[in-house]
Length: 453
Image (cartoon, rainbow, N blue to C red; front, side):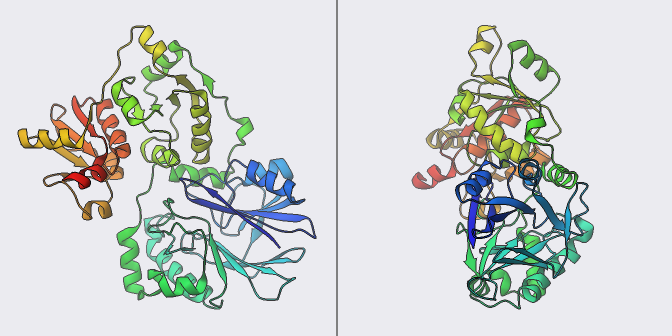
């Protein structure tokens, strides 16, 4: 059996190529949208991709199933409850797929979504029992999938399904079976996932806290820790049900002229500045949002910007633009109209720039001692806040801040703080775009603060 795991850094997405070298065929499971990795793996190993399985309708990333079908002619398989609009073959509980010496048993395991399956994979050349489970978003290493994506009216039913799928559907498999989930650390499809990309069912039964809880405690814990739902999740689900547009059909992302950027801004379209925090702080185009180029940029864009918007990007280099376009396409942002390199042209035209002061932890400490009315907004998670925070700070996790705003006046003096300065710059840039006059972002964040104070 041929088996290969592919990881998307930042998003925490895990996909798989499963095949039989003797037979020459392979399937891709839960593919990302950009498919070059799968084509290269298949080519290097003498395999032809003939099938694609999505273990469920994904909410956090656009599936690469349409791209793979277009490039290879592969058949797309989804569960019969998936209600997709594109041509596909349906899967149901008990189905079997054979690829030479590889046998894939389909197990219906609802809970994360009502259309989820787990795939039990057997290498018949070695034995008759399943060697591994591709658990999709049912069981993660150290956690389980979030049950809320199908909607609030189905939440109780989904939690019940999730519990049954874990204990009853997976209960028939022995401890030695390996598990390979569709997500790992960094994903918003669950909470508290391990950085380890695989495990065994026995180890999860022994150490995964969700296996040890009564049903009532299981339900309460899921309601307590389920992550926020980013702005782009509903859009991604819709696109994955419809069948996402091929990347080759999307409007080219062109270099914008000064006048084009001005027109876009006048329409109210978002401008996303990909530069680092200090560069953005020194000078930026007024109204732009700072989402620095990191592996998690796509996640934060999905939190801040509606994917139905037309978006312009700004960075220091074309390479940075290209890197982020890949990330943003993965999470459903197809309406990127163009890019702008640096601020030189903007400044040369006599246009004004904004300024976001970057306040050191020492500067913040001096400000707090001198001004009792200075507000500190901490945008970290509940867990980070509970591990230590500045006395008198207001806790407002970034997703809640984005959805609800803050109850302060635009003339107030405000310092935004997070762990390192990345999230605080996002939040501070949003406040600046809304007309708040005296906003600061704390460089080094609480990580630096804790080392000194």
